[in-house]
Length: 240
Image 1 (cartoon, one colour):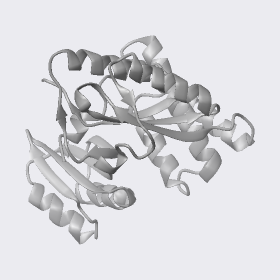
Image 2 (cartoon, rainbow, N blue to C red; image 1 turned 90 degrees about the vertical axis):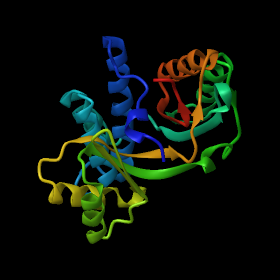
Image 3 (tube, rainbow, N blue to C red; image 1 turned 90 degrees about the horizontal axis):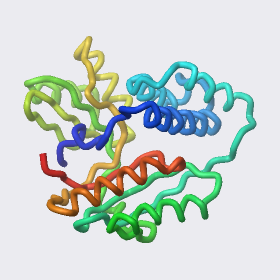
Image 4 (cartoon, one colour; image 1 turned 180 degrees about the vertical axis):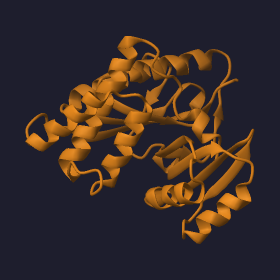
């Protein structure tokens, strides 16, 4: 299944400009989720997960509030989800999820990111079948058997569980996210998650080396700079 939580994000926001982009992406996603499923996190579990992740990524409270207020008002932009798939340097596989109000513009922007960085955009379904839609939890621990038993008792369909360097990583179907998180919080009070999210996990990894590494990093940076891009998933494994 791979080391999920280490690969979750290839870079963190380190500059004011980068942080602003992170805040903007969360604001847009929270707005869209709240507008479609309701502004109450207790009744909109997807929204609750988004807000939890935003707080974990230190998104200011006013950014979250503004997105919720905007959704409650019923106005604002009409964003739609768009997904693009393709092949990066060294033949690695890439999925790009976007929220857009102009599909033609977004497709052109994403395609430019690919073509300028030794990559090729493909058609719908080109690589998605090689990824699994998973809930992933990572936290410090040393007894994966205890965790597995705890989750099984809560009727969580665990796909895989790994212990590496004092970190336990649990994989479960995306539909079991809140069931698994509740079981972990109740069974391990005070648990601190290194990762608790729904993501697309690659079934195989593609090891990159040489010039492919720099080109792939260029691809990720270009996609990060696209306002419409929300998430990027890939199966690239970079040298440590």
